[in-house]
Length: 45
Image (cartoon, rainbow, N blue to C red; front, top):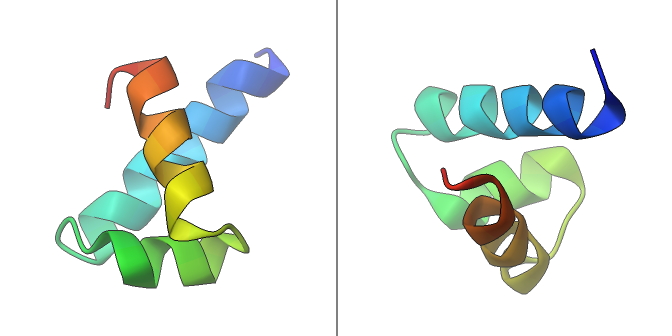
């Protein structure tokens, strides 16, 4: 698995865990909301 694949997987799991709540997922992942939104767009999540 590449780093991008691992990152996408972790983001998907966090979004599922928090029922799509970006603020909670971002906090858990140690990202700002805007950084998480950029990654969601990058990975097509």
